[in-house]
Amino acid sequence: MPFTAKSGKFNASIRSLTIGIGDKAITLGGECVLPFYSFDAAIENAPKVGIEITDCGMAAEPESVQKYYEGCTSVTDMAKRAAEFDGVDFLSLRLEGGDPNGLNKSIEELIRIVKDVAAAVDLPLVVCGCKSEKKDEELLSKAAEVLNGKNALLLAAKEENYKTVGAAGLACKQVVGAESSVDINLAKQLNVLLTQSGVDPQAIAMNIGSAAAGYGFEYVISTMDRIKAAALSQGDAALQMPIITPVACEVWSVKEVIASESDIPEWGSAKERGIDMEVETATAVLFSGSDAVILKHPESVATISKLIKELV
Image 1 (cartoon, rainbow, N blue to C red):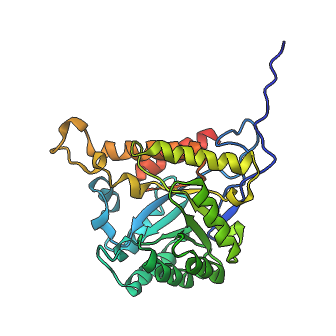
Image 2 (spheres, rainbow, N blue to C red):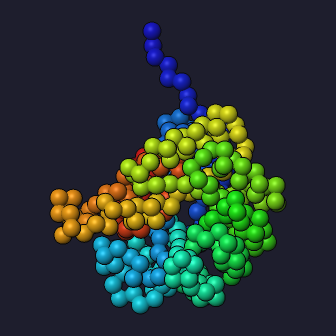
Image 3 (cartoon, one colour):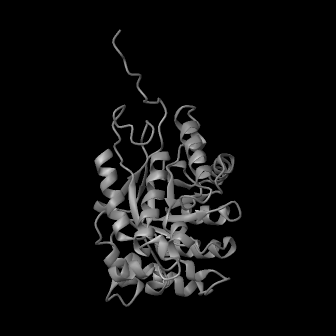
């Protein structure tokens, strides 16, 4: 009896979402199959790869990353350099210096950096907050204003501040990132709340949460799998937004990456450890349904970009 393969194409699909403007604009989502199942249906919009820099400039970068930005004297210089690396589809600017428990930079200083970076590069821009829900209300709202017309992604609106951040995205026609804590029900609830407040479902991307590989990572993967299954096989419209995963901020803070070779020589090259963990983490979330990943090391970006091109 001949074998007849069953198609894995679904009647439902992930919404398409565009970030950026002009020739460099990127589109996330649109797929009606499981990740990389291009043998069942064409995947028009391959997953995208972004590179992260922060408002803290060179001082915040790992030693293995700093050499790629040699000669850069400002965050704007770093943004220009980052835009030139192989495989970069978009730029992510993390405003970590605004953290009240850290450097506690002023809103005004951070917004000047956002404005300068936006003027310096033509790549689609993702602006990540400082992880303080309260401060991010004003920070991301101001960022939405100065980026008016750029169709940027504000990452992220959370349960504590979604009304303010969502309203800013709506008013300034920016894409809103909905961030939840690795829970399908929380992810769905936040999407519903944002749409009820007036945000177009076509202007919402999900960050369902992440972790570095090995750090409770199986729960991240299972949650992402469940979200994609609900969106495609069950046609759940409240979960059909594309997923973006900030990998860099998780990977480059764990001990396996930041421990020096002199402290733990048996772990081998610190540079290779960081790249390996970033690539492993990014690969796993892409195969579980993420439509975009944010990485830090240029070699990681090039590797993941090449992987995507080989598989789509």
